[in-house]
Image 1 (tube, helix red, strand yellow):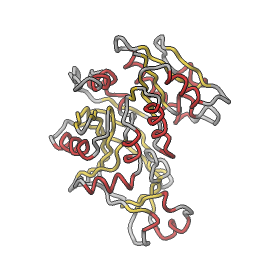
Image 2 (tube, helix red, strand yellow; image 1 turned 135 degrees about the horizontal axis):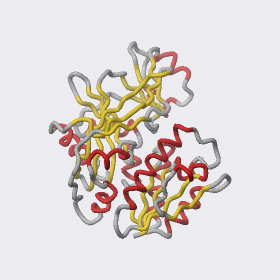
Image 3 (tube, rainbow, N blue to C red; image 1 turned 120 degrees about the vertical axis):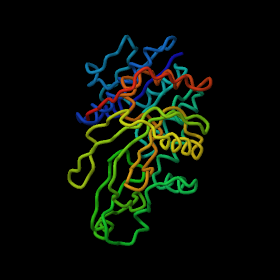
Image 4 (tube, rainbow, N blue to C red; image 1 turned 90 degrees about the horizontal axis):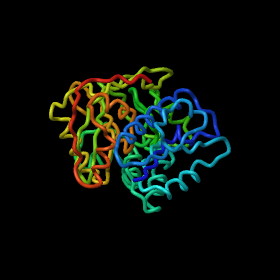
Length: 323
């Protein structure tokens, strides 16, 4: 099987613009983890796209690398390589429909998509529609409104881009009235109450309404200039108390198009466990799973093509990922 691995930031999506150390580091971390896992799977021939500025920072393991330089159209190269492969694993932000477009392209080419399909990305990539869908299925989530429909009221709020990734385009706001007046396109943003609590995430596998819990992770943040910044993730931080797997299974039933690896962000207050968002793609937590659990998740995803994953955890430890 020929498999193309594509991680937007490190695979050429930024080839024609400056590449900051933060973006490059996180993107390269995910691509390297995928590459390491796939090269350990017998019978898989891996192809990788890589920004020319990052070539020296990636351990290729004998993999065929397509280097993307300034002036090159990464998408055209993606098309050409995908046509020559059997399966593709794209990793990209949901912003501006980017991940959805890549997933749909793979499907249109008749290739095997190793992630959730475009329909699942379209739903979960829209934070407001995700909120409405969670409510419809009775899954506890953070109250969410469109910025365009909000009347100024006291309190502390978080305003986010409706399709933003992580802390991107989010702000902590205390004067909602002044903030609303300063935003030209209010339909692009949502508003949520700024809740205090432990910020956790779930890493899981999904297939046709079923879910398998891999790990419960702790996310650590700092706040600078009224914005959250993720500083580290402790992978496999907590054991399942029964509630995490149950929650993941309810999400799988509510979002049956989710497939392969996905992450779920939670906020846990003193009284309840709330879903914050669903990430239908590789998350940074993936990079610590092999070390924490002793299992090759890429191989487990390939097993989903034939049936159920064989998850035999040979380790049980925590791994800190510092960003």
